[in-house]
Image 1 (cartoon, chains in turn purple, green):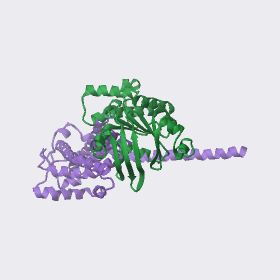
Image 2 (tube, one colour):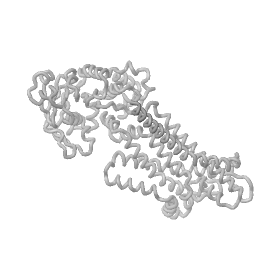
Image 3 (cartoon, helix red, strand yellow):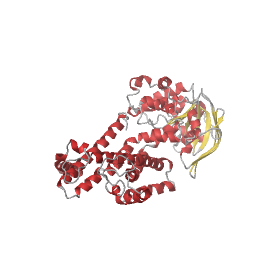
Image 4 (cartoon, helix red, strand yellow):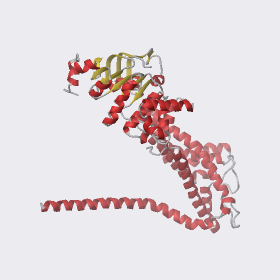
Length: 291
Length: 252
């Protein structure tokens, strides 16, 4: 009897150890995930916050040697580029995802589309820039905001498509059957029921794609090109935050280095704000208790 | 008002699997008809052929004719029209998870473009009353998600949702098999009341349930309909030996 008791307590000690070890590893992994983000953020604030002032948000860059100036044109330029990119990437991406999950399941075309999306996801962004350069910039004969937006938009498509597909596939078939059983046409059921049920995940996918291209520099070098002056014309070269940061960071001037840090900080904050805003707006349409 | 259903030489396949073989069956209007039989005998496939849900599976195929009232559903109408006239309640409650109770109930109308608020309000109330759920949910129709109700309430909400589009026939595929005894008896009471207005076809594993709610009962086995008669006859004096073996619990 006594021996058995010892045996049990030895086993429970092992279990206690295994349990706490697993918890500790999970906590460690969490810290390792969060640490780089926190480190980047803290470092950006340390290097960039001191150069942030009203002028940064209201003025355009000053010529070399003159102190001050800001990135107002680049902030607006990035907004314009991302708006074009989202207008292209989100509808095409969601449409592709709907096709893959709802209409083309198991067909050859669907497999081809899925494969293409995965390959497109792996194409280096500089290659995307060159492709758009030869497709739009060369025929038009000049750099333009439009071509930059198209480049970023194409980069968004595969991410949006694949996450939309995954999220739609997670919607239980019972929900689709419920809609069809009520005499709802299939297209209506897909748009109003399946897609709506999957919408939190689909929105997350769109935001991931958005945040990823918001920081892209390479595809813009040959397309949007950058601009030291005010421009919101789609037909003209346009400034963008990542481009401006790149140009300033490799310049030999300390003043520009400081502005580059500030620009990087602003870029991250704006991305976080945009993502939070979309999430907030989207979450208001969904009832509590919904799974 | 309900209409009768006349099934003639119905055959159905899933891929190479011949799941229904030569089914002939007259289902009377404004009565409840129960379909019993062991798992995999084809009774679910059969009801899914009555509103053309069977064909939503790409590998499925059907031959034969099903007349609902005046209409041959495989010849005269589109699946979408048929499903509006033939409502369906599934085995597991399947509310639309993103919608409120109110939106769940009127979803069939709203998704077909019907938008008159006042009429919708009336239909939602009437459907929920008919499904014996109104008193339990009337205070948070638009506040609560349909998915936040209990399983039994969800199932009655799904019945209300099917009733809201004003069908002539109501198909119920084991509507109480996922529910506790109290919810089950509520659903059975409901079937009892609804059959004065609708033609009801109910698939069930529970023979007592068939005996309680249905006037007619059909026994399915291995994709064939073995016997179809009044419920009383099936349970007291079946003509076929296999029916007797099944209802006395010798197999299945």
